[in-house]
Length: 458
Image (cartoon, rainbow, N blue to C red; front, side, top):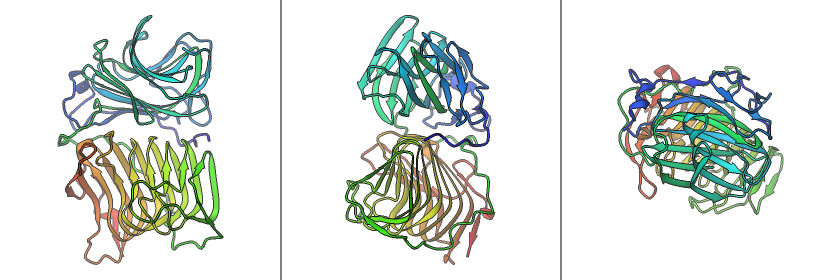
């Protein structure tokens, strides 16, 4: 499925908090707080802010940057600052063709010139390889056989912290090692004797790993941007009646768009909180699920393996989670509702931003939770707009020591005269195997963004 074209957004290059500029990257950041200092989704239709070296580059109508010359020996696009040191760069990459087993499509970090960089590449041989490149001298830091194919989106991430370089594909580590080739440099998108597409490029100021230190007191940048209110789209007034029901015995894989016509799907799992349950729907990167009612038992709900969109999806009785956002960077929930979630409704394990709008939630623990003890500790963001909540303990839970942010607008709390519903609960994220610690709640202009006028009690 092609990415929906949104209003144009130019590459975003930001300072890190009040009084802290991108120059701080040149000095090397020792805090575990990560700020998004650059992003580009190419929805403005151009490559402003990037510099080209070789290849044939263009942005297509769906907002994807493509390099179409498979005969080019080395095609590159560079962006950012040559002074950047410790940072993480991530992009969605889709190989279109490979001219040979050694042909490549990939992502670069700490590029000091057009031929000196670290790069994480997808090879025609089906492997992913993290490389230190100095002209024609290429050193493999590590690799993994992943069965890479053409026409599929992969999320690539390079984390550079000091001399430690790590590479991830779809959130899974593929290589890690120590290398002193380059201590600073720009980011890049690269191909060699291959063609491919690139999208959703982001740079965080931390070198990654498992951050555990508290955040600085300066405010993070204003990413992700708040949603634009749409007063013509109110949250649903009630729960829909299914057009029919279908028992499901195995996970339904979705690629492209699945429209259920408001049919009820049920039958996986036991309706409990076991984390070993299979999902009802598994969405491939770029997939859309719409007009579906998920009954009980629903197993682990919906798994998004990459960027995904959920439109008018209803959970009558949430079991473990309604939806888990895993391998992508941009996820949207528009319309629908969920009820009877003893823990949380939406679980955010991957990186990037979840947007929840025009939604109802009833009898739930939390509407949204940024994972506080996953194997990979990303900076995560949530934007929640035009939501009605009833008998819900909290709207969102985030990890402030990892730089998470939550933004709220047009939140309506129903039947809560004592105002016991928490809007934004703050946690200290921890390594996998430990339990996060709750450290506070409420708007602060740093991690939790809302004003009294954004919350209405009925």
